[in-house]
Length: 355
Image 1 (cartoon, one colour):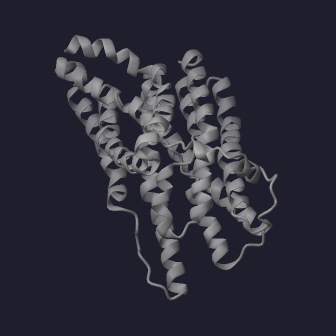
Image 2 (cartoon, rainbow, N blue to C red):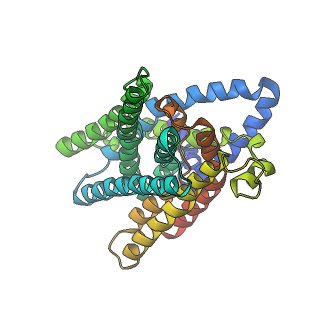
Image 3 (tube, rainbow, N blue to C red):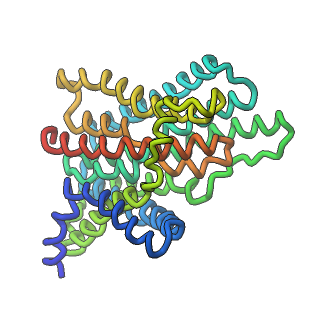
C-alpha cells in the first residue's frame, strides 16, 4: 500500500497540482448537467470547510514540524505582518480618495469604505495554498497563510464589528457585535495552534515526520492531497455563466447604461486596487530588494504571488457587517477569473526559475 502511495505522490505534488483547477472547472460543468449547479455549490461550501479545518492546518503542521524555525523565519513573519498592514492601509487610503472623488456621504460613505477594506482580503488558503506544493516556498507560504488567516478572520472582522456597532447605535438599530459565524471566528486561532504546536515540538525534541516511519509518509500523503483538492475547489467555484461580455463591458466602463449610481463603479475600483495597484506597488518595493540580494528568491516569489491572489470568497460571510453584497460578489468573481490564470503562470515561472 505504501509503495502505491509513493507512486501516486509525485502526481499530486509541485507543479503537477495546477491542472486540478481545470479538472474542477470542467468536471463540475459536466456534473451540473445532471445534478444542477445549485446542489453542487452547496456541497462545495461544505467541502471548503472540511479543507479549511481538516486538511490545511494538518498540512501546515507537517511543514513546520520539518522546519527549524529560526531567525530567517522570524524575519519573514515580521515582513509579512508589515505587508498586511501596508495593503489594508493602502485599501483605506484608496477608499478615502474615491469617497472624496465620488462625493459619497453618510451611509454610502461607510458602506463603500467597509466594502473596499474587506475586499482587500485574498484567497490565501485555497488558491494561495498552491504555493505550499513547492518545497522551497512551503515555509514562507505557510507563514503568509497563517498570518493572513488572522487578518481575514480576526482583525478585519473586529474592525468591521466596531464600525457596524457604531453605525447601528447612531441609527438606533440593534447591533450585533460580531455576526461572523463561529467556525470562522475560531479558524485563525485553530490554524495558528497547529503552527505553534509543530514549531514547539520540533524545537524542543528535534522530531520530524521521518521519525514516524510509514506513518510519517501517510501523513505526508494525506497533507499532499490538500493542494489538488483546494485547486479543484477553486475550479469548481468558477461559473461559466459569469463569463458575460455584458458584465465585462460594465467592469471596464464601456457600458454606461446603469449611470453614475451603478455598483459596477465600486466593482471597478476594487478590481483596480486588487489586480493592479496592490501588486504593482508590491513589485516596486520588493523587486529591487530581490535584485540586490536583500531578500531570497522564495520570499520574493511568495510575496509577489500573494499580492495578486483573487479576493477571497469567504468575504460573503462578512455581509452582516454592512458591506455591499453586489459589489463584493462581482469583485470576487472577476478577480478570480482574471487572477487565477496569472497566479498559475507566476507559480510555473517562479517554480521553474526561482527555486
